[in-house]
Image (cartoon, rainbow, N blue to C red):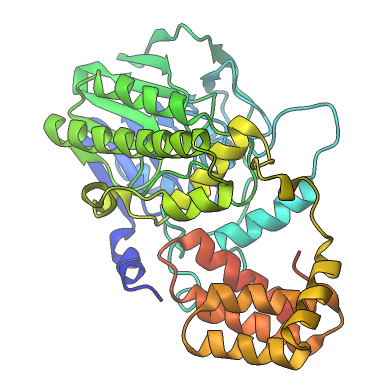
Length: 427
C-alpha cells in the first residue's frame, strides 16, 4: 500500500465536530459529511449521507446534542452519497427539502427518457469505490472518505426535493437561521452552496475537498465543465468565509487559510486546462498530453492536491474528449485494428506467445507494471480462453494496486483482479 494512504484511517476517524456555536459536522461516518444547524425550534440538515445505515449512526450522534425536530433538509447536489439518508433524517415527518432546479433524480447519469448503459456504470462504480473489498487489507479509504463504513441501505434513502431554487439563488429563513442558497456549478452542474453569513460558515458541497479534484470519475461521467468549476472557486473565495465546510474531508478554519487553499485548488484546475489546451493547439495527441501535463511542484506537493481521488492524467484525457471528442487528430487513429487482430499480429511480430510471456515477466520483475499489463492484454485479446494469461494479469493488477496513491485506481485494480480470479472477463 502507498505509504500516504496508511494515514487515512486516523484522518477519517469518526467524530462530530462543532464548527460554529450551533453548527456540527458528522465526519468519518460515511463517504460524505452531514451537517446539522441547530435553530430556535428545529434543525437544518445539509446533505444526508450515502446510506440509511450511515444516516442512522449520524442521527444518533446528533440526538446527543439536540432533540429538536428536523424541519429542513438541503441537498448541495444530487450525487447519491449526499442524498441517500434523507428518509432517516425525516424521522417520519415531512421536512421541506431544498435543491437546485438543475437537481437530477438520477445522479449517476444524465436524465433521459432513452436507455443508458446503467449496468456498465454500476459495475464500474463498484470497482471505483471498492465495494466488496475487505477492510483494512484491501480498502483503507476511498480517497475522500473512510473505507470502514456501513453500506446498509446504500443509495436507498433519498427523498425528492419539495422546493427547488433557481439560478438566481435565494435567501431563506428557517428556525431562526438565515441562509443564502447560491448556485455554484462545479463537480456537477446542479451544485448549490449554502452561506450562513451570521456564523461565517460556507457549505461548499464537493466544489472542494482534500484531494486533487475528481475532474473525471472512472466509473463514467459526462464531461464536467472544468472552467465552470474554476470560476466557482473564485465565487467561493468572494464569501470571505471563516469556516469552509466541504462535502468530504475536514472543514477548513480561518479566512486566510481558506483563501489560500481555494486559490491553489483553482490554479491547479486552470493549469490542467491551459496546458492541455495549448498542447492540443500544438497538435499533440491525447496520449502525449496525458503523459506530459503535470502540476507544478509547488501545487503537486500540497496535501490538499495530492491525487487521492482525482488524477491529473485522467483530467487531461477528460478535457480533451470533452472539448474535442474522441479523435486525437492523428490520422492513424481514424481506423484502428480490432484488439483481437492487433494482439495476434503483435504476438507474431514479437516471436510468439512464449516471447510475450517472457517480456511480461521481465517487466513485472522490474516493477514496470503498466507495460506488463499492456503486454499480457495482447495475449488475452488474441485468445480469451488463455487462462494462464488471465491469471498473470490478475497477479499484476494486485501488485500494481499497492503502488497507487489514488484510491479509485487502487480499488479498480483490486476489484478487476478478483473478477479475473473468478473467471469474469474484464473489458
